[in-house]
Length: 304
Image: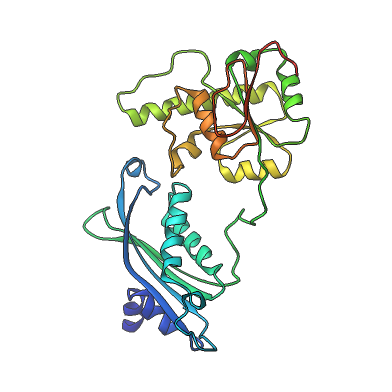
């Protein structure tokens, strides 16, 4: 029992050696510390904290001479690059999610056979809090990541006048006629939003005001489905669903947060369109902003 306990808290390299069933080579990354915003608790939002990574990758032994050729081995850089890529993709709530994604990315390398990942938060108290996982090549990839190419959507921003207009369904018909996936965006409904003294709280309130208006739009046309996660959006695009963007989760979880806030909903929708690499950005009832993707405006009286 003592040995089991010692092994449970041992470095991943020791655990890898103890559980090996056949000879293998190992590379390791020890005590790699980065500062990142991560965590599911509200007090962890808007603050960087130190996170420590220890990673051990088992690789198949080389069958021939390496010849001092870096291309024949699994480079240490692949491990740190995998960590950086996953941290840069989106804001992550759970260490378990981050560990699984780092493991999956590294296991795509042809030399990698099995991986041990330990991640610890260092600033949550006078101790470290962490998780450790073991994954082997061939295990199921994370849900929803089947690496099927996601199409480039058409994203349309509707002013409140457009949402209330009698021609709403006609515009939706036209925007979805060529089977390009359609995502609709709105601003906050007309009215005075509550005011909070905290900027973070106000941001939440303003995002929720947009989401309330998203439900108003969806109620006006039964084809429209309100969604809040990237996974839901990807599924809807692949399956021909028309969606209305509820922005809170994607905005708050983004690794590259927009420089504009929810009180400029048109600019926020433009940021979202660029993040989604949209085929085009259409604005109904206002002027279209200049973006890195094609954009155009449709006046309220237009039907084409």
